Image 1 (cartoon, rainbow, N blue to C red):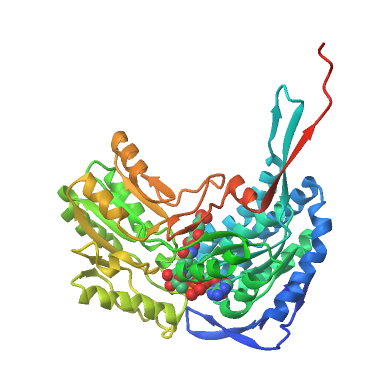
Image 2: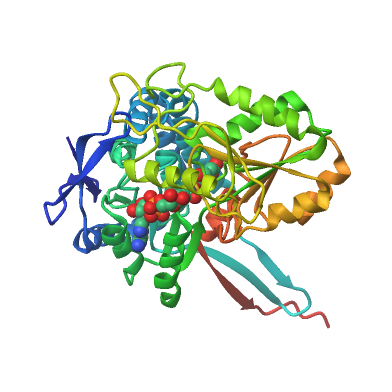
Length: 485
Ligand SMILES: NC(=O)C1=CN([C@@H]2O[C@H](COP(=O)(O)OP(=O)(O)OC[C@H]3O[C@@H](n4cnc5c(N)ncnc54)[C@H](O)[C@@H]3O)[C@@H](O)[C@H]2O)C=CC1
Ligand SMILES: O=C(O)/C=C/C=C(\O)C(=O)O
């Protein structure tokens, strides 16, 4: 099977006629071919997007909204097909793709289809000066959206939906590691009546297709989610071109657990925040810090719960962890487990590959819990992005906050306590864009979403995303007033 580009409303082969292998992580086999696009394909996609822009940017808000809501409906109607495609392409449990990834992709279109009808700009009357200022919020033109492999359709649509809702036209590239659901989205957009050229989906590698989007002189903004190193590289290219940039990058998120927490709830959610999606979510709580009096108890109970997780075929109903996304990624995660041992960490559970009968070449790894004794060790500082968590105790609130903040990242943090004053103090002091208290990955799509420090630039979500995808223009009008004499 061939994964083709979707340009100007048509599925087309890449100009080079070259292809990349697409792997099924659950068995390590190549099961389709991906268009290996280059700058020529990006130029074709750009031309289609540029041609569509004048009409789309003048399409009424109602019409845009109706089309976005239709796309949302069609994603929901195709839930089973899309969830199966996602599980096969990514290795994640089908149950997760069905309950989280695909419903959220639909929700992204529904949310921005509705949000655009409520988006407004400001006016400032200069009283006594016969002057009124009003601020236009105009679409940027052709914009680039580049997304990663961990939540493929979920994050692809999280960018595309606000971009087109705001009247832009788009050249988008999903990850070459998980292109399948973005490929399927093309036909859904056609069926929903999205005019040709409004969304162009180009497949291919980061250094070729991705780089060509970022370098294109007339693609005016880049919305990117992915690794921090790639984000840095994109910023170096796009910054001097004065492109608008939204960067949602890596995390090394602390999970601070205090003795006064609701213990059972905390334990259940901490297992989820550690290992959901095989730990491949930038928001996973990969550093667990526990207040000393309950440290030994949590360590024991947490490990007991983790032992019960089933690593297995993504298509089995009782699978909790599926396969990691690629062989390279599996090896990267394993290298951190080896490093942990060298650094003096203690593997409390896991650390080994799992062989699944009939799927022996799949990329399976045990959920792994590592006790660390030095917050500065590399496994506690660097993003692993896999089913690996560290755990260590703290004595005081000040120490917990200091350890939580002493990494280069600042995406999210989770706090478990029933003390309101402590909640307020820590939420204020913590260096992260998102703080969850007694919950995790609890998402209201209206809220600003993104990180500080090396976790990125700007915020997605709600009106923040619509603001990102529009340019403000202030119009100042002096008028003749009434003669008051
Ligand atoms: N949301 C997150 O926080 C994510 C973090 N990561 C982290 O990044 C590490 C590397 O994973 P990768 O798959 O290599 O992610 P990546 O950051 O390289 O890939 C994300 C997207 O960027 C594209 N890309 C790569 N190089 C590009 C370039 N020069 N110009 C434009 N686009 C480019 C890729 O094709 C993909 O669509 C992971 O091990 C993980 O630690 C990976 C995926 C998501
Ligand atoms: O918007 C969300 O709910 C989650 C986003 C997650 C990522 O951006 C990620 O894991 O990269």
